[in-house]
Length: 506
Image (cartoon, rainbow, N blue to C red; front, side, top):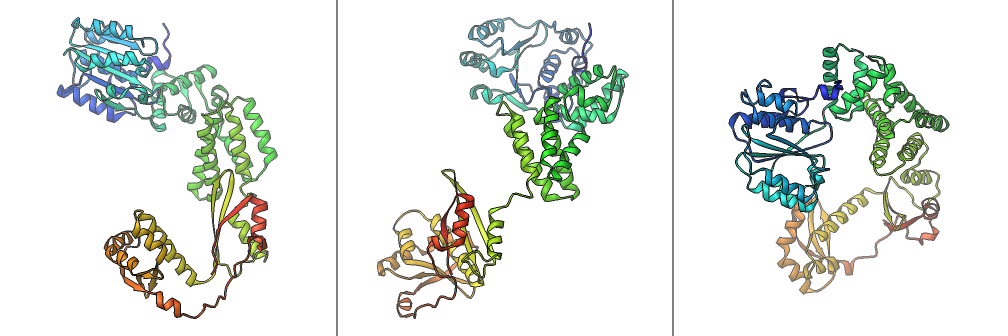
């Protein structure tokens, strides 16, 4: 009977398992030392070797002549297990054998000792069991007979109840690296006498998404399509994936901001039935390579970021092509999309704003109730930067303090001052009771301040009399005006549906 590549090249011993070195090493060492446990849980993406390793472990536990933690594959027990005829190895599909009565039947069968060394129960996709079946299984694996070993495999360990997980030695299988998959495909082709192109094997390995089984299945499909050969020119048509040339054309259209060309291109790949997820994934890889090469770093970084977002969301909706289109058109329009900060700076240069002598514009875009609230903070003097530093640390200090009378006193009557590089706690209003309370808690306040500023407050100073006798401060900078008089405010509201939530004046 014909066996496909995935069946024929399924690993039969640990040394044949690809890309799961940690799992293999731990299991082999446990078998060599005899330190096996009653229950194992193997979890990870499909096609990474969970079921194969479960069978290898079961085979090795029953092997009559194991060597260095490996089954001999020659004894009667090994031959029976390879042919799935070993009565001591029971393999169950959790999707169809998931009810309470099934687990009860299984538990009853464990009362009969094995013919060989051990009775091994493999339950594939264990997360499919119903709650009552899980509870029944729990009782069984808590106190199993000495001759019984359980091996569970699942792609969704989060659905396995915690009480089962806690009683298993757990192994997490990782996606297999692209290069290992490609090398294994090359090894298979050489052994099978298949004519191949290495570039085609690389394409298949990328398409497999870290799954060796996916890669072997795709390689066989390509083999049949090409009449017994694995050729690069047939990868795109046989597997429904884009070629590198197509991806480069796509990225060139983005770079040239050709929206019309991109619309035609996307229509073409939709007609070819390309998977939007795989297409975006390949485009991201090439865009990232361009970032690494230092070519138009800003553009390709943003293109990759947009496509990655589309990939993530594409698994959540039924029309992933819509996401790819939107991400593509946005990527091609990056040069035309104006940021809020750029817009404000352009207004300042044109003199269309009431703000003068501005050196920097810092905009924080906050979303609330589907509106953009924009905080505009003008700065024009070095002294103002110093004031902002003081205000920032003061606000953080208040945030770090517990609610209570001390915090209330600080908030209402005190402030933070910096002179000649030293920090002082200044009382600006209030009475002697407020001063006493802050003085009593000064050590605690200073500790909180030190964690923020990496230095200490020198002392508490009283500025109440100084403020009362001080002359009026002359204002040489921007005078506060009503928001409706500021041209910037008007334009921001019109352009971004914005609301000014905070504005500072010198």
